[in-house]
Every structure is written in structure tokens, then in C-alpha cells.
Length: 469
Image 1 (tube, rainbow, N blue to C red):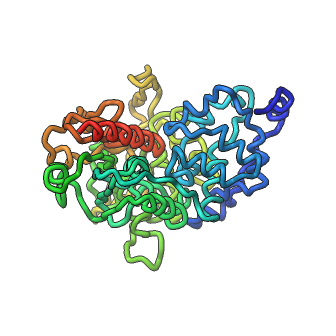
Image 2: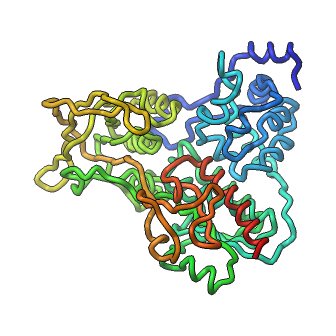
């Protein structure tokens, strides 16, 4: 615990900047943008932590990592100890350290951020996780087998977090993944330059496997297996559904069926999971010389920055102002640095094609902000007579996603809401006994760490449920 003098000193130390690739260089490759801290930088940044008696950062973390405790270990140079503290609550620290919106969660609650810059908690978590991976990892205690089996649908962050916690409690856990590689949105949705797949994602999934969790790929819940068959025929005591939200939304405007129109999901999946960005892979994807991305979230930034790296002049079209962009500030900043153009207060009304059925332009209309909508954001209103065209060869729709309805349609007793999301209580219990759910399958598209938090809550609820059988 720091004394008063130590707290004053912590306030005087400026936040340690993180090293990154030069924007002009990184815009031409798929290598990771951020280099992260080295040991010296991490220890210096860690000394800024005030070790608060009632740390608001912990309660703001969806998985409740004991943040002051791991940071104090970093100050001491005990990086293995820091990794052990994090491992008590998070099974994916290197991933979370890279992609979590810390600015609205742990760092957003840091007391130092009231009058200055908060502690770089995410960058410190990443440093500790990377150091641990490079130095043998953390040995996690696993309880003796308890004789109960649990099935997990989906190997994304919710499924992995749920499976990890259950395995530590002694459960025989099997994850069923629809794609040929585990990881869910971590492998198909987030670009390589933000989250390296082999070095980081695969390594952390292997840590989950090391707990005894089995992963079966190419298994489609609702087709290859059903929830009913897992419970009734295969001896599973409970099922957790963490299948995410992979069904893309479109605008339903004229021209969306033209060649050259993609959902962001398809565009990113082909580039990330199928490595379309590499010349030695036979999964090419059309981008062309000009790309328009419709949307303003993190996925829109990912799609735009991917298109840029494929050689396209890229423009993001968004119907509100930059102040309302839902994407992380860091992602917007990086996109601008790399040369992405932003057309704000702009909304597509039609996609125009050539005589061969390929996209040639997007017809847009200018917008202005009117009264706030249900979410509190000011509703955009079209400006009459302000139509104009943006020339482009490719249009990527990044308007959000919803859960695939297949599981709900093939499982008796599962209720969904009007958005197609599974109905579940705060602990993940659905309307079907023995079936739990969490993450995007319940909330709609959200963040990695929120999905992990839901997976952990469901694991605790499953444990209680099975104990009562």
C-alpha cells in the first residue's frame, strides 16, 4: 500500500506511452500494430497505481480481476506472481489486454483518470500475459473429477470462460465448435493486426485445453448435434450456449444484392480465418481500389483497416457525428493515422451498379442530428435534396449482428426475445432446465470481456444446478 507521499508521486508520473508500428508502414501489412510494454516500461507504469483500499477498477471489470494485486506484483518485478493473480479470474488475459475497452471499464473507473491519465491497466495485463506465455505459463490447480459432464456450444470468449471455470471445478467439459478452428469471434472477427491468431489466441486456447477441456470442431449445434440429444442421449448434465451473434444485418436498400457488397462478418472471416490476405492461400476476396464501409463500431473499423491493407482507398460512412461513433477511441485514432477517410453525417440510400452487376457507387444523403433516440443519442434526420454519390468498387455493411436462430428452433423450451436473442436470467439460466446461455447469444453483439463475464456467471450457476441434481 502506498503512503501519502507515494500517492502524490504516482500522480506526477505521466502515463507511459506504448510503442507502435509507424502508421505508414503498418497500413501495408497485417503485423500487430501495438508492440506493448517491455519490463522496464511496465514496472514504471505500474508504480502509478495508488493501490486503492476500495478499488473501483475491480468492480468495473466484468470478470473482477484483482487489479491492484497483480499490478503490485509488477512493481516488485514478480511477473509470475502477477500472472497467477490474473489467472484466478481470467482465462484469456493476453486477448483481453489487447481488445477490451478498458477506457470504459477498469481504466474508466481509475481514480487517477479524474484529473489526469488512468493507469494503463490493459497494457499491463497484456505485458504480464505475454511474459507468462513466453516463460512457461501459469500452473492452474484443477479439482479432482466430480463425475459430471457439461457441454459448451461455441468456443468464443463466453464458451472458453465457462469451460475454464467448470474444468477447474472438476467437470468433464466438451466444447462443440461449428467452424474448423476454435476461438469464435477471436479468430474470425478480429483482424490479425489487432490480435495475432497463432501467437496469442491459439496459445490461450491451449491453456484452456491444458485444464482438461475437450474441443470438437466442425460440429453445428442444431444440425450435427442438438441440445436435446446432448442432454437426453449423450449423458451431459447441463449445456451452456455461447454461440455468439454471427447473423449480419443489412439496410434493405436497393442494390444490396450487387456483386461487391459484403457483410463485415463475411469480409473479416475470409480474411482472418481463411487468410484471404495471404498470397499463398487460395481464398481470395474482392476489395478493389475503393471501398466504402457502412457503420461506426469496432467491427467497421476492423473491416476498413483490413480493406486498407488489401490496397484499397477506404471510406467509413456513418450517419451521426464523430462524437457518437461507438467504436473505441483507440481504434478510431489508429484508423485515422493509417489514412482511413470518414464521411460523417452521411447515410446510404442506394447502391449503384454497372451493366455487369458490379458495384460502381453508393448514393448517399446528408444527415443532421435531431432529437435523442431511446438510447439517448440524437437521432439522425435526412436533409432533403442533399443526395450525392461516392464512387466505390466494394461496399461492406457493418450494421451489427444478431444470433443465428438455428439453436432456438431446434431446441424445445428455449425462448427468444424480439431481437432473436435467447432469454436468460442474470446467471445465464434459460427457460429450459439444464440449459444456460451467455454472451452475444443473449445480449446481441457486445464485447469479449462482457461475454467472458457472462460465461463465468453461468459456470457458477451450472455448478449450483448440478449439485442439486
